[in-house]
Length: 136
Image 1 (tube, one colour):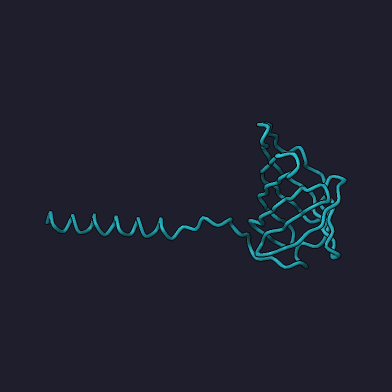
Image 2: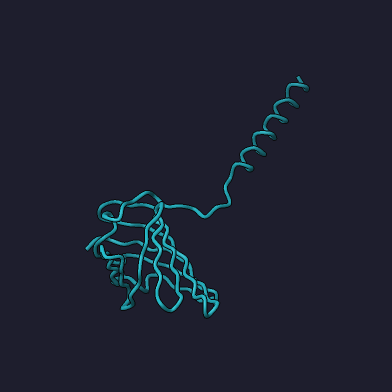
């Protein structure tokens, strides 16, 4: 009986190691959405963020709108961006060297939940957080 217990422990250990080895270290991808799915105007219904200067806030962008246009441009909080979409990740960039990577975690025709990270290359500044958008 003791031998059988050791066999089970050994098999459990092997399965645990195999499971850990199969985990990917790549950046997560979002849910698959098409360009047509995200084109439109979206209103922030919830948000939270923290930045590299150790500041944070919650729901300070509620009511702001994100406009995603079919010409590959977008606007948010009065600023303009170019955008691309690949594997559920919306990438926004501007001419100031700012890159915003938005991972779409869930999508319905009326709501998007997403996480994001933002970097300002010239200022060595980063920010990350979460947004919930509702279609307007």
